[in-house]
Length: 209
Image (cartoon, rainbow, N blue to C red):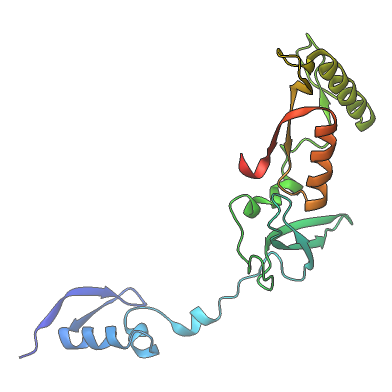
């Protein structure tokens, strides 16, 4: 004797359907079939008519490289021209055709979009004078000149020509340098030579920090 299933499943139209145990297991086994799904209250025809409009539909795809480290993960940047004529950056994702990252990105690379559209990103150098309470926007010429002067003053103040035993060392102990992880081999070599020529002994690399 076949026992009735105690549950009552909703049915389209507000009514309910009672299933025998055998019918219930039969519908479960044929869950991918239209008959079984329809009996449980779903309309396959309506589900297949749902169409999703992608945000990047019709966008221009540009190839780029992640700027965070020297691994060189490839990126795909999707852009589209808005109604006002300005090009809008919609999305950045990993390039699946790249032999380096095969479409995957690390947590930093996955947030590359924020480098271009984040409202918190500082678009230009900022400077706060000694004793001042607020930062002000300055030019790159001012920034580079100020940086060069600070390096010169720090080096002159902390340069050690000889150690306590009278040995010539010619080192600068008041400045440290950290290289960027996106450096190429040539850029890293040049930066190291430049810093060593100034006498720096505290050299580090961002990829190791």
